[in-house]
Image (cartoon, rainbow, N blue to C red; front, side, top):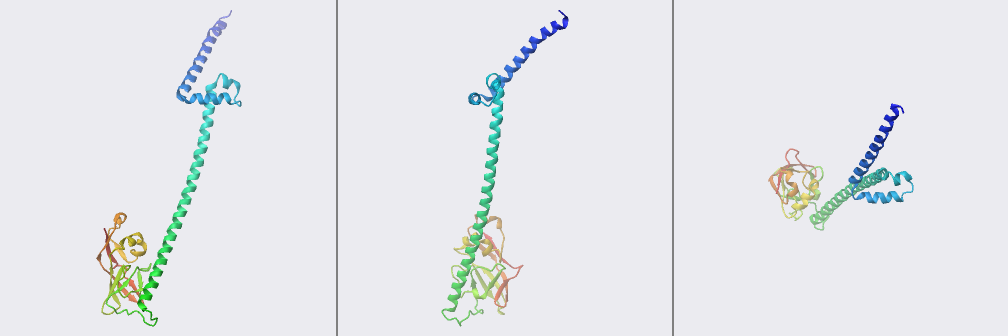
Amino acid sequence: MKDWMWIVIGFLPGVIAGGFLIYQYSKSRIYSILAAEKYKYLDDLKQDTGQELLLRKYFRYIGIVAKLKLSKDQKKDIVENNNREIGQLKRQNEKLKTENERNEKALAEQKITADNQASARDRFDGDPGKSFRSNKTEIYFTIPEGDGSFKTVNARNGQDIDCFYKIVPDKSGQKGKLYFIPGDYDLRALDNIDYYLNPVCEIQNISDRTYARKISMTDPGSVIKRGDIWIIEENNKVKIKLA
């Protein structure tokens, strides 16, 4: 017998033994990684008639890897579907939040209108021909217009519980000082700061707004009368402090 045949005969068992050792090692490593889960995947593999007989009977650990890949793909699809649903819920939440803010603004405007109508009835005392006299020492208002003005038609004779501002005209009646009136309704002003405070007030410690419960005035502002409207001077807003 030729020498190369002896070499082949001697080498072949080594190849077979090496292949068997690799097979056993890879199988044991995969099973050790899966731990308890391997029994579930083995049962699934036995019941899966779609797998080839060779994978189901002799190379089961390869079939298990295929099962793992399928499971991973399914979970990936579940995660992607959940992410899409979360995105939709976030968009719906933002939409509801916007609608809620719009409704709150509309309610605030309705309240302002109702307050103005009530104050007009109080001023006229049942006599439509009697107008409000702007030359009084002090005149009171609920909240300013969005542009930082006060309409004399909305002025009140005396300080009602919902009056937040007082104007004291000078002798000419064309200029005056604007005062913020702190009281039991400070929280209402803090909750609606864009309507009640920002148009005519300069908040010195706005960073404390989250925990604030009271408002105090540190300096009055200045207003000018133009026609039937009192307008805040841009650089002379009321200085207030939150506490």
